[in-house]
Image (cartoon, rainbow, N blue to C red; front, side, top):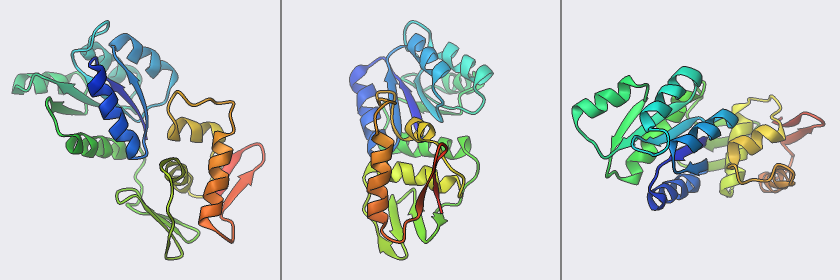
Length: 218
């Protein structure tokens, strides 16, 4: 998934982002609501983890803008205010879920994953095609019963290709979904990841190149 973390405490924001990246997500981080709105205008996010009390533009306003303009983005609102009235207000603003601080990262991760499933079209728990099975929750990949160890980026790229169900996915889309905004679009990052993925999956090749279009699973 592509995730935006909006949190004005840099240590907390970076810790959350690091944890989500370890789970193969592409994560961008901003520390105020104004920067959040700028990122949302140019990037296609699945989930926004939004602290309610961010500066410049308040989190309530960011949430309202998301609800009005970006119907497909799911919002997990974070706040130090844990009262029922605060939770009700946050949900009324358009948030999809609400998590009071302090929180356990495991719970945040589980809630983000649940929101991500709602942001995407329904997909089977285990993705299968051409003898490949990918379990997104156990983060395991097998081909014809053989375990295939993949890096986080290789796993994320393969998941996007399997979700496409045989339709070609462009390098730009893979870069958008598997890397964060710091990735250089003019590098050969996607091509090199595809080459490594093909080598690890073995023969016969199942990741095909459609010239001028992208990549697909046979």
